Amino acid sequence: MFGVEASINLKSEAEIALMREAGRINAETLNAIKAAIAPGVTTAELNEVAEAVQRSYGVYSPFKNYPGPYPFPASICTSINEEMVHGIPSNRKLREGDIISVDCGTVYEGFVGDSAFTVGVGDISPLAQSLIEVTKQALEVGIAEMVPGNHLGDIGAAIEEFVTKHGFYVTHLYTGHGVGREMHENPQVPNFGRRGEGILLREGMTLAIEPMVLVGTRHTRVLRNGWTVISQDRSLTAHQEHSVAITAHGPEILTKL
Ligand code: MG
Ligand code: MG
Image 1 (cartoon, helix red, strand yellow):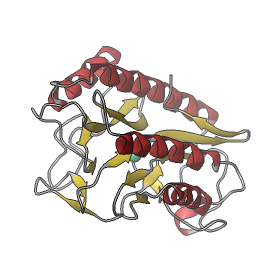
Image 2 (cartoon, protein in one colour; image 1 turned 45 degrees about the vertical axis):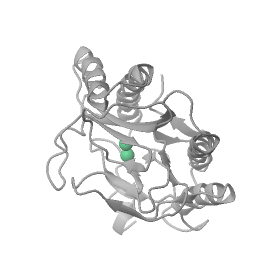
Image 3 (cartoon, protein in one colour; image 1 turned 90 degrees about the vertical axis):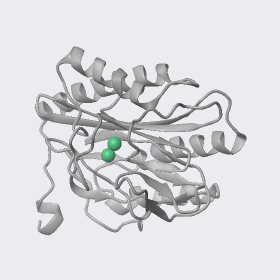
């Protein structure tokens, strides 16, 4: 092994058990946030919900103070409508018809769980519903490729083929990633690729798979706040993410209840 392959941290059973608990707490946090989403609620209030759950477990989010243009100021990312990822919680109120993506991480006993979902606020358009459903299924399609002997490119190829078939776009600029003691470990996991290319997938790899899907373009830009990524044409976007272990028996989703 050399290069990227040598830099990938394979996890032991014991380490995966800790990641499973990090992922479980993260799922509980995301569920609490999901339950709080309603018209009139601010994204800062959703951040408070997350921090309350995390405090009750004595855990914290690796998002807080994550290095960037300036340290990320919150424990979750909240991205509304054309905002794809890295939206900053604020006193912006959710409105009926919005769609919101929430991304959250949990550090438990030194290991990270990283997961995200997109949901509608009240009644949403058929287009928004279809976008969310395709993004959810794209995550499943990507995870299904996570078996020993497949290649990294199989994951991205499956995701992009699925999304494109439904008339939407995946970003080529933002990717999934290895996850473990650090939120972002090697390798990067693009949402596009070629079957049979890239590193060989092996038992003990733990990857965050995260399709980011856009309605009108694959191109994005960053808002002046330095963090928030939006679709360049301001069309709707959605994001789904799980942290997943590759086991001898296939993929195991770690960020679930
Ligand atoms: Mg995430
Ligand atoms: Mg991630």
